[in-house]
Length: 303
Image (tube, rainbow, N blue to C red; front, side, top):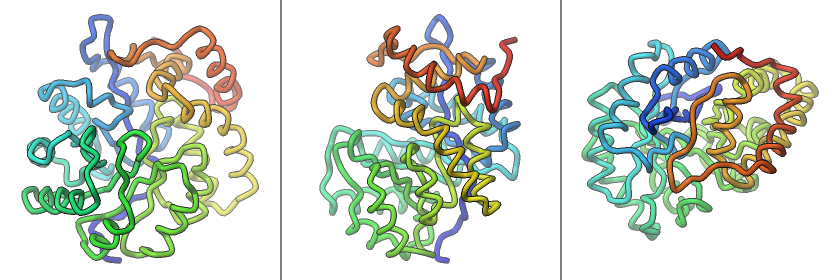
């Protein structure tokens, strides 16, 4: 294996709780993290798209990173989302994350800019040259307008500080291709939640998982069941999760994750604009999909 860090298990792409005054609600944040740890997660991924990093000030992003770092145990992996629209800003965010104690960062292509493949290679090379962190690539072309193609993966496959790729394209064939090309060089990390079991089967040993905010016990149970070798039971669990996962992937992902947290008894507030509230119909659809999950794995009574 050529990478520095081995990733495994469920690592929540953390939602960021906001209070009624649109400030970060650290009491709610602690309750959420405590619940996730009890469910069996293996680490923490703050300041990703599920965490609404795009709506936060620089100081808020640092506050989130410090809070999660202070909460984390030594055996829990830490991966900081440090994305920004310009290379110099990514370097700044990554440097600050490193100072706080994050040795790993998660980086999609800089948003809005739609860089070409050779520009992305130069971007990631510059970040690695300037900041002593390990890099998890993040492929989410539907949101970023740019892809992390095989040209980029070929370039970084033998770099031990590029430890893997979170694959959120939703294209299973791409995941299979990544495993077949880069096994032992780049770790495949599940990011396409409604086909998470397929990713496990094809070699994803970890899942950076937004839905785990509102169904952590179920996601961790799926991971443990698959690892135990009980593929039939794992299929049953994925079947139970699939509708809720598919509804999340279809639209308004972050709003539905936060509503799911409310349904499980761990409210984390509303999303920041421009993300708007769910309609009554959207709530009803997701509530119905969540019902068998909550009935099977339980919820946390509101304090």
